Image (cartoon, rainbow, N blue to C red; front, side):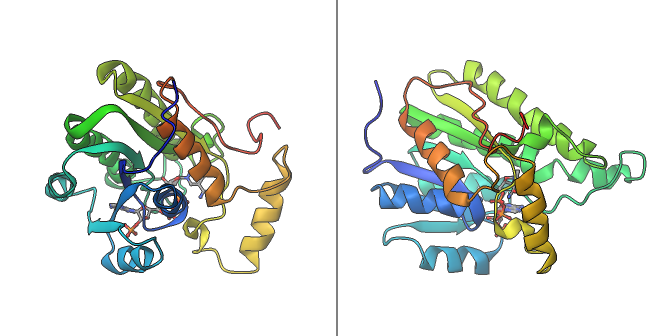
Length: 242
Ligand SMILES: NC(=O)c1ccc[n+]([C@@H]2O[C@H](COP(=O)([O-])OP(=O)(O)OC[C@H]3O[C@@H](n4cnc5c(N)ncnc54)[C@H](OP(=O)(O)O)[C@@H]3O)[C@@H](O)[C@H]2O)c1
């Protein structure tokens, strides 16, 4: 049976102030869900909230701070679905050349942040609910200097499979994405960014980079399809096959 509606469902999007998370928050709110977004930067959060349909709310939450995550779920109370899209800057660098303190810090938001969010969200998720973690195809197909990012992405997939069993009947899934046009890439100035997207698009079967809405659609599917759990739903334009 498919949960046919998101109307009235309580959905929390951590990382919801930007990119894939913001697109997911928008799509869910438009479908009638009660949406709460969370991220660490107050200004970014408020700008995002201003663009969401009425009724959406948000809380400043730094995933590196356990007390913030506890406060977020105390604020939310019971929920139906958690979508996790948060990710901070992950500068390239080989394992050999990266100081260990920096290497460890690369897991703080994407991996430990996800674990912290799940720890405090899970007891509040209503029957039929779900958790979706967002990660990257880099976990399966890394580039040079990206072993640490690959480790974090691959760990998220293992985490999802373990949680699907541990938290059942709560459904837990992952969405690894290929290149998606989001503010994550804004640090690269134009016109280099456009040129890079064109190059990366050529490495896919679809001949495109993704849009945040492509990932949002996958997130909504996983929230609504009550028979999907422990699944890695790759959304990459065929990058892994190309
Ligand atoms: N875009 C791509 O091509 C691509 C490809 C593969 C995988 N991914 C991964 O997919 C995820 C989403 O990517 P995106 O492109 O949507 O990125 P994005 O537009 O940069 O959004 C990242 C979100 O994470 C939040 N965040 C960062 N640090 C945080 C912290 N300490 N606590 C709470 N929230 C925090 C940001 O908000 P604040 O700054 O307000 O905290 C923002 O809302 C990331 O993990 C990214 O690495 C992206």
